[in-house]
Image 1 (tube, rainbow, N blue to C red):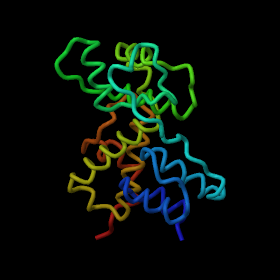
Image 2: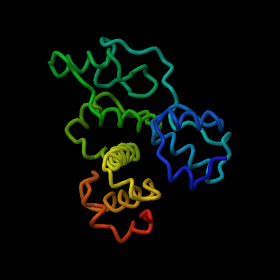
Image 3: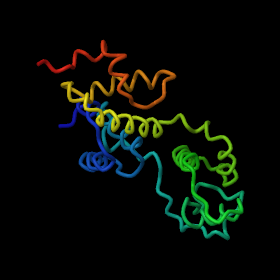
Length: 203
């Protein structure tokens, strides 16, 4: 039986989260942050049948490049971040090859989650000049934590602790809530040893 304590103290890949969601009858589509959200709701007492997907799949046929313009709605129009949209943006910016930027993907997910019927293609273009407004979100936090944890486990020092995932979580919370770079480095173990020494293995 999955418990809140077990879930919070273990690292899961996206495929693991999807398997958990499938097992308990939760929505299985979405980002890692969204899947985490579904599982945490269940662990806090919400019945799986009452947990609905944050975003609906866009089932409309995809728009062709020639059907897209600045006033095309991002929701329920058939607009998707695919090769047709890539061709439109390449033409708009007059470049040979266009690559979608993370703020654009984040904006699309926000539009779908909030059912924003007013958002248009022009909004996607405008955020490219102001990406910082979209950086603070649960998905970005998930990415940063994942990278932090991966780097933590590359440091052999993690073997000195009984519950390394707990140690990593403590160190992550410190830098997450501070102005320090959101990256792991060995000095964190040294600087905050007093907070994690209880998990040190006994010889």
